[in-house]
Image 1 (spheres, rainbow, N blue to C red):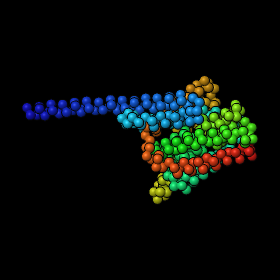
Image 2 (image 1 turned 120 degrees about the vertical axis):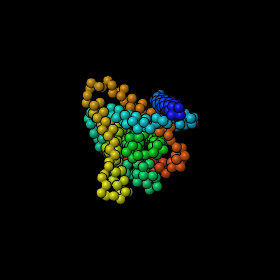
Image 3 (image 1 turned 135 degrees about the vertical axis):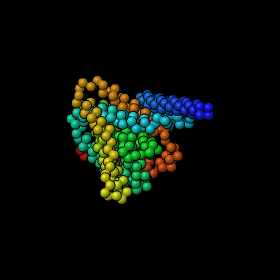
Image 4 (image 1 turned 90 degrees about the vertical axis):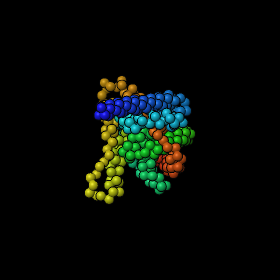
Length: 357
């Protein structure tokens, strides 16, 4: 009798445990779904706002980030949505970078912008080490210094998010780097627009300078547009030449980080583990497919739009996880270094255009 009672008590306990596990699974799924819905809403809202006058300078990705940060006002929703932010920030980010490759038309870059591509390589090769050196001289953290250097030197927020996995960056560091790039990109866009009438450049030359010096694609388009259609086209071609360098830079940084970790460990016999961002291979493959397979030409605009939508979700995820106290504490020194180097890249771009274009 006692044995039967123990048996039934065990069954009741097991039944209750199963119910609790099922309920927790349902709650987790609801929280995960909430995170997807919220970040998608932020991305769509950012996309809509970016089409409005004034907001276009800020750009879709940065607007999605800001909207994600704004959601933190409602703490319970933020905590629930964070169940899925790791997955979105990881998998969605990589998918977005791959789809972004369709924006690069390699045929146009090679035929119309070979000089621009060479100039872009020269600028990126100089500015990433310089940005990093200045930031480190101001005692900026190693990872944050590299994130800011890539964001200012290559293609803004997309570059920051593209190399953050390779550098194992924290969410707060990525958000701070994106914020710095967004602010400075907007400021220097306005500076270049005001300088345009007094520089003495042709429309095409001014577009090249904008593409070489400004941080985001949206910034280059906005500045180049002040010089008309020719300026816009030149700015886009030159800026996309810098975007193309994101993949090789990410691989080089992965090798550099592996060497650094091995040196820090002191074990020179340790096997070198290079965190190669394989999704960058997808980025290059997407560029090649979009450029050389005419059959999918009709789908390329939709794929690029999907890329920005997915990247916007990843940026909103960063906003949901940002630590405002960290930004307030660590933001001044990287901002000073980025301002300094933004003036340098502007002067370098002016010199290249003046002497070579």
